Length: 209
Image (cartoon, rainbow, N blue to C red; front, side):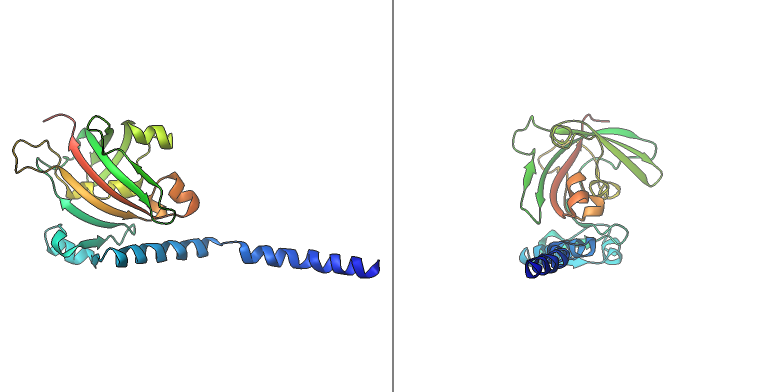
């Protein structure tokens, strides 16, 4: 009997240690996130450039060289595929944008998109005050899935560098970007699970100015 009690006591003492081996700290999760981003960049053969080089190039990325700029302040990686036709969102302006996107979780490969049906589009209201942009979803798939109007900070990062318009000729392109967004700048799942996400997003004004 005493031997059985001793065995049970030893087992109870070891249980927390075993549990600790299975438990991921926030630091562990962040390291897993960093590794997933590095692996995605490597597998996709993307070239990372600095913000300084990005600005020296006129706030553009060379798509032929598969360039992504790393944004120092928020950890977002951004590729501008098309800067877009039209004009930038002006200081003091409040504008509705039509947004189409593909969202891919880099850790569990979950995909969410609204870019197949031409009528399946999200509407994002954007407000600019000085150099500050705020945005909210007013209709569309994002509201249905995430139950929140909040636009993740990472999806706002490209807005200062894009023109927003509607194509008037065959040569006009709407604004399009690719993003790698860390959990601190991402959706509610990203922040909860410490997951990084990849996005392809296009923007255009809902109505012409």
